[in-house]
Length: 238
Ligand SMILES: Nc1ncnc2c1ncn2[C@@H]1O[C@H](COP(=O)(O)OP(=O)(O)OP(=O)(O)O)[C@@H](O)[C@H]1O
Image (cartoon, rainbow, N blue to C red; front, side, top):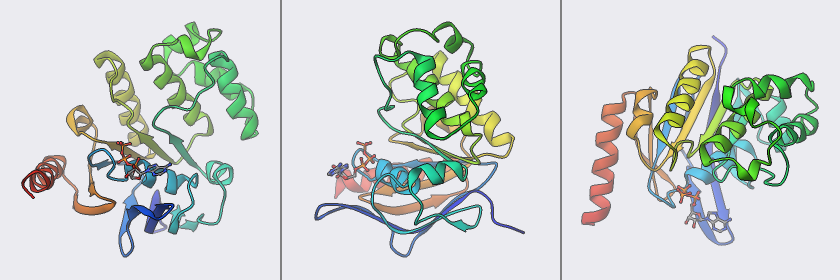
Protein backbone atom coordinates (compact mmCIF):
# COMPACT_ATOMS: atom_id res chain seq x y z
CA UNK A 1 0.00 0.00 0.00
CA UNK A 2 1.28 3.49 -0.76
CA UNK A 3 2.32 5.66 2.16
CA UNK A 4 -0.14 8.29 3.44
CA UNK A 5 0.15 11.19 5.86
CA UNK A 6 3.46 12.52 7.07
CA UNK A 7 6.61 10.75 8.17
CA UNK A 8 9.51 12.54 9.79
CA UNK A 9 12.82 10.81 10.07
CA UNK A 10 15.66 11.95 12.31
CA UNK A 11 14.54 15.57 12.62
CA UNK A 12 16.91 17.90 14.46
CA UNK A 13 16.65 21.63 15.18
CA UNK A 14 19.28 23.89 16.69
CA UNK A 15 19.04 27.56 17.60
CA UNK A 16 22.62 28.73 17.54
CA UNK A 17 24.52 26.19 19.62
CA UNK A 18 21.48 25.01 21.58
CA UNK A 19 19.68 21.85 20.49
CA UNK A 20 15.88 22.26 20.59
CA UNK A 21 14.97 18.98 18.90
CA UNK A 22 17.05 15.86 18.64
CA UNK A 23 15.15 13.05 16.96
CA UNK A 24 18.20 11.48 15.32
CA UNK A 25 17.36 7.80 14.88
CA UNK A 26 13.66 8.40 15.58
CA UNK A 27 10.88 8.11 13.06
CA UNK A 28 7.60 9.91 13.71
CA UNK A 29 4.42 9.17 11.83
CA UNK A 30 1.31 11.29 11.43
CA UNK A 31 -0.95 8.81 9.63
CA UNK A 32 -3.94 9.70 7.46
CA UNK A 33 -7.32 9.50 9.17
CA UNK A 34 -5.87 9.76 12.67
CA UNK A 35 -5.23 12.46 15.24
CA UNK A 36 -1.71 12.20 16.62
CA UNK A 37 -0.77 14.07 19.79
CA UNK A 38 2.67 15.44 20.61
CA UNK A 39 2.68 16.29 24.31
CA UNK A 40 5.48 17.74 26.35
CA UNK A 41 6.16 20.55 28.81
CA UNK A 42 7.09 24.08 27.78
CA UNK A 43 10.39 24.09 25.97
CA UNK A 44 10.23 20.36 25.09
CA UNK A 45 10.55 21.14 21.39
CA UNK A 46 6.96 20.73 20.17
CA UNK A 47 6.86 23.98 18.21
CA UNK A 48 10.31 23.30 16.80
CA UNK A 49 9.06 19.91 15.63
CA UNK A 50 5.99 21.42 13.92
CA UNK A 51 8.08 24.18 12.34
CA UNK A 52 10.68 21.66 11.14
CA UNK A 53 7.97 19.53 9.55
CA UNK A 54 6.56 22.62 7.83
CA UNK A 55 9.97 23.84 6.75
CA UNK A 56 9.93 27.16 8.55
CA UNK A 57 13.07 26.51 10.63
CA UNK A 58 16.29 25.01 9.31
CA UNK A 59 16.27 21.35 10.31
CA UNK A 60 18.28 18.19 9.87
CA UNK A 61 16.57 14.94 8.90
CA UNK A 62 13.85 14.19 6.40
CA UNK A 63 10.16 14.88 5.99
CA UNK A 64 7.99 12.72 3.74
CA UNK A 65 4.51 13.69 2.59
CA UNK A 66 2.55 10.79 1.19
CA UNK A 67 5.88 9.02 0.76
CA UNK A 68 7.46 11.93 -1.15
CA UNK A 69 10.59 13.47 0.32
CA UNK A 70 9.79 17.18 0.76
CA UNK A 71 12.80 17.99 2.96
CA UNK A 72 14.38 20.23 0.35
CA UNK A 73 11.17 22.12 -0.40
CA UNK A 74 10.48 25.58 1.03
CA UNK A 75 7.36 26.14 3.11
CA UNK A 76 5.22 27.39 0.25
CA UNK A 77 5.88 24.27 -1.82
CA UNK A 78 5.21 22.01 1.16
CA UNK A 79 1.89 23.84 1.56
CA UNK A 80 1.10 23.22 -2.11
CA UNK A 81 2.03 19.57 -1.63
CA UNK A 82 -0.67 19.22 1.02
CA UNK A 83 0.88 20.26 4.33
CA UNK A 84 -0.67 22.97 6.54
CA UNK A 85 0.41 24.49 9.84
CA UNK A 86 -1.53 26.49 12.40
CA UNK A 87 1.35 27.96 14.36
CA UNK A 88 1.39 28.80 18.03
CA UNK A 89 0.78 32.56 18.27
CA UNK A 90 -1.40 32.47 15.14
CA UNK A 91 0.65 34.83 12.97
CA UNK A 92 -2.12 37.03 11.69
CA UNK A 93 -2.25 40.62 10.45
CA UNK A 94 -4.02 42.38 13.32
CA UNK A 95 -4.98 45.53 11.39
CA UNK A 96 -6.25 43.72 8.33
CA UNK A 97 -9.77 42.36 8.21
CA UNK A 98 -10.49 38.68 8.56
CA UNK A 99 -11.26 38.47 4.84
CA UNK A 100 -8.03 40.29 3.95
CA UNK A 101 -6.02 37.93 6.13
CA UNK A 102 -7.49 35.00 4.24
CA UNK A 103 -6.91 36.75 0.90
CA UNK A 104 -3.20 37.22 1.68
CA UNK A 105 -2.78 33.47 2.16
CA UNK A 106 -4.86 32.67 -0.89
CA UNK A 107 -2.70 34.97 -3.01
CA UNK A 108 0.56 33.64 -1.58
CA UNK A 109 -0.47 30.10 -2.36
CA UNK A 110 -2.13 31.08 -5.65
CA UNK A 111 -5.46 29.62 -4.61
CA UNK A 112 -8.81 30.26 -6.24
CA UNK A 113 -10.24 33.40 -4.53
CA UNK A 114 -13.45 31.41 -3.97
CA UNK A 115 -11.50 29.59 -1.25
CA UNK A 116 -11.65 32.74 0.89
CA UNK A 117 -15.45 32.72 0.93
CA UNK A 118 -15.49 28.98 1.63
CA UNK A 119 -13.11 29.54 4.57
CA UNK A 120 -15.44 32.22 5.98
CA UNK A 121 -18.24 29.66 5.93
CA UNK A 122 -16.28 27.03 7.82
CA UNK A 123 -17.19 28.56 11.18
CA UNK A 124 -20.50 30.53 11.16
CA UNK A 125 -19.11 33.24 13.42
CA UNK A 126 -16.25 34.02 11.01
CA UNK A 127 -18.59 35.23 8.29
CA UNK A 128 -20.12 37.71 10.75
CA UNK A 129 -16.59 38.99 11.50
CA UNK A 130 -15.36 39.06 7.90
CA UNK A 131 -14.86 42.83 7.69
CA UNK A 132 -13.49 43.39 11.19
CA UNK A 133 -9.79 43.79 11.88
CA UNK A 134 -8.45 40.41 12.98
CA UNK A 135 -6.85 42.09 15.99
CA UNK A 136 -10.19 42.89 17.61
CA UNK A 137 -11.46 39.32 17.47
CA UNK A 138 -11.47 37.18 20.62
CA UNK A 139 -8.69 34.62 20.93
CA UNK A 140 -11.13 31.87 19.97
CA UNK A 141 -12.34 33.71 16.88
CA UNK A 142 -8.76 34.35 15.83
CA UNK A 143 -8.02 30.67 16.25
CA UNK A 144 -10.99 29.79 14.06
CA UNK A 145 -9.70 32.22 11.44
CA UNK A 146 -6.23 30.68 11.33
CA UNK A 147 -7.65 27.14 11.26
CA UNK A 148 -9.96 28.15 8.40
CA UNK A 149 -6.96 29.80 6.71
CA UNK A 150 -4.90 26.62 7.01
CA UNK A 151 -7.74 24.56 5.56
CA UNK A 152 -8.02 26.69 2.41
CA UNK A 153 -5.58 24.37 0.65
CA UNK A 154 -7.52 21.20 1.58
CA UNK A 155 -4.39 19.82 3.23
CA UNK A 156 -3.79 16.09 3.53
CA UNK A 157 -1.73 16.77 6.69
CA UNK A 158 -2.66 19.44 9.25
CA UNK A 159 -0.31 20.48 12.06
CA UNK A 160 -1.94 22.39 14.94
CA UNK A 161 0.37 23.90 17.55
CA UNK A 162 -1.38 24.63 20.87
CA UNK A 163 -4.77 24.82 19.22
CA UNK A 164 -6.85 24.95 22.39
CA UNK A 165 -4.62 26.68 24.95
CA UNK A 166 -6.46 29.43 26.84
CA UNK A 167 -9.66 29.29 24.77
CA UNK A 168 -13.29 29.20 25.97
CA UNK A 169 -14.74 25.65 26.21
CA UNK A 170 -17.42 26.29 23.55
CA UNK A 171 -14.82 27.40 21.02
CA UNK A 172 -12.64 24.43 21.89
CA UNK A 173 -15.62 22.15 21.26
CA UNK A 174 -16.08 23.65 17.79
CA UNK A 175 -12.39 23.22 17.02
CA UNK A 176 -12.39 19.64 18.29
CA UNK A 177 -15.41 18.84 16.13
CA UNK A 178 -13.54 20.22 13.13
CA UNK A 179 -10.49 18.11 13.94
CA UNK A 180 -12.61 14.99 14.36
CA UNK A 181 -14.41 15.58 11.06
CA UNK A 182 -11.13 16.17 9.25
CA UNK A 183 -9.63 12.94 10.55
CA UNK A 184 -12.79 11.03 9.65
CA UNK A 185 -12.52 12.33 6.11
CA UNK A 186 -8.94 11.08 5.90
CA UNK A 187 -6.79 14.04 6.92
CA UNK A 188 -3.68 13.32 9.00
CA UNK A 189 -3.80 15.62 12.03
CA UNK A 190 -1.04 16.43 14.50
CA UNK A 191 -1.87 18.28 17.71
CA UNK A 192 1.02 19.66 19.76
CA UNK A 193 0.10 20.59 23.32
CA UNK A 194 1.54 20.83 26.84
CA UNK A 195 -1.56 18.99 28.18
CA UNK A 196 -3.76 16.15 26.93
CA UNK A 197 -7.05 17.15 28.66
CA UNK A 198 -9.92 17.59 26.18
CA UNK A 199 -7.66 16.74 23.24
CA UNK A 200 -7.91 13.16 24.51
CA UNK A 201 -11.50 13.17 23.16
CA UNK A 202 -10.24 13.26 19.57
CA UNK A 203 -6.72 11.83 19.72
CA UNK A 204 -5.87 8.30 18.61
CA UNK A 205 -2.46 8.20 20.27
CA UNK A 206 0.83 9.99 20.04
CA UNK A 207 4.19 10.68 21.59
CA UNK A 208 5.67 12.29 24.68
CA UNK A 209 8.44 14.77 23.91
CA UNK A 210 10.88 15.75 26.66
CA UNK A 211 13.94 17.93 26.11
CA UNK A 212 13.80 17.45 22.37
CA UNK A 213 13.47 13.66 22.46
CA UNK A 214 10.60 11.19 22.15
CA UNK A 215 10.45 9.32 25.46
CA UNK A 216 7.20 7.41 24.90
CA UNK A 217 4.89 6.47 22.04
CA UNK A 218 1.38 4.99 22.41
CA UNK A 219 -1.55 4.13 20.16
CA UNK A 220 -3.89 4.65 23.08
CA UNK A 221 -4.58 8.00 24.74
CA UNK A 222 -4.96 6.62 28.30
CA UNK A 223 -1.57 4.92 27.97
CA UNK A 224 -0.09 8.10 26.51
CA UNK A 225 -1.48 10.09 29.43
CA UNK A 226 0.01 7.66 31.96
CA UNK A 227 3.37 7.75 30.18
CA UNK A 228 3.32 11.56 30.16
CA UNK A 229 2.53 11.73 33.86
CA UNK A 230 5.29 9.23 34.60
CA UNK A 231 7.78 11.21 32.52
CA UNK A 232 6.81 14.46 34.25
CA UNK A 233 7.01 12.75 37.64
CA UNK A 234 10.49 11.53 36.79
CA UNK A 235 11.51 15.11 35.95
CA UNK A 236 10.10 16.44 39.22
CA UNK A 237 11.75 13.67 41.26
CA UNK A 238 15.00 13.77 39.33
N1 LIG B 1 13.77 31.22 18.01
C1 LIG B 1 14.43 30.63 19.00
N2 LIG B 1 15.69 30.99 19.33
C2 LIG B 1 16.36 30.40 20.32
N3 LIG B 1 15.89 29.38 21.06
C3 LIG B 1 14.64 28.97 20.80
C4 LIG B 1 13.84 29.57 19.76
N4 LIG B 1 12.64 28.95 19.73
C5 LIG B 1 12.68 28.01 20.70
N5 LIG B 1 13.87 28.02 21.35
C6 LIG B 1 14.28 27.11 22.42
O1 LIG B 1 14.18 25.79 21.92
C7 LIG B 1 13.66 24.91 22.91
C8 LIG B 1 12.39 24.27 22.39
O2 LIG B 1 11.40 25.27 22.21
P1 LIG B 1 9.99 24.99 21.52
O3 LIG B 1 9.28 26.30 21.43
O4 LIG B 1 10.17 24.19 20.31
O5 LIG B 1 9.30 24.08 22.64
P2 LIG B 1 7.77 23.87 22.95
O6 LIG B 1 7.66 22.48 23.45
O7 LIG B 1 6.95 24.23 21.77
O8 LIG B 1 7.53 24.89 24.12
P3 LIG B 1 6.30 25.90 24.32
O9 LIG B 1 5.14 25.06 24.72
O10 LIG B 1 6.80 26.78 25.43
O11 LIG B 1 6.14 26.63 23.04
C9 LIG B 1 13.45 25.75 24.16
O12 LIG B 1 14.59 25.60 24.97
C10 LIG B 1 13.35 27.16 23.62
O13 LIG B 1 13.78 28.09 24.58
